[in-house]
Length: 148
Image (tube, rainbow, N blue to C red; front, side, top):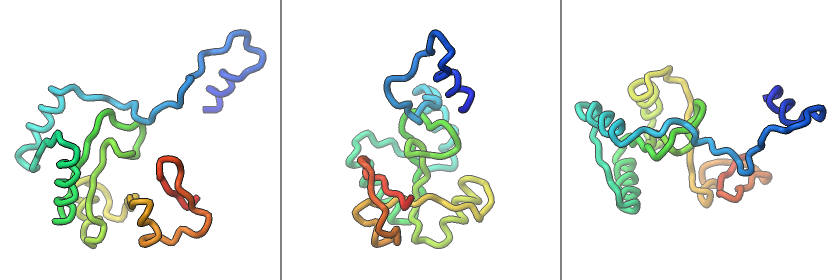
């Protein structure tokens, strides 16, 4: 990043490279075609229950119902994120109140070491019921909350 910043802001440089006018999106990963998605779903049919629900309200209700039953839900929406962290476009959702869930997701779903932690998601209105963030924590314009 330092070399890139130097190239953009070097005062000796006569012509400046173009600078983005809008913030870059983290959602710059691949965007599979409909055929690629269909092929992936077909390949997963023997070991997954797959349901495509186009109505958003019905889809949310179904996800909540599955989570309440103790199911694990994979959610995929549009382009994937750049980098190793899922930011909502590709997520594994599960009920964290179930003690064996962390081990199940790490070992069976993600196939990684069982000690790896997860990032919790909580409605901003409910955050104080789950976390002690202190007085300095405040939500941003998108209702994302961080203690930092």
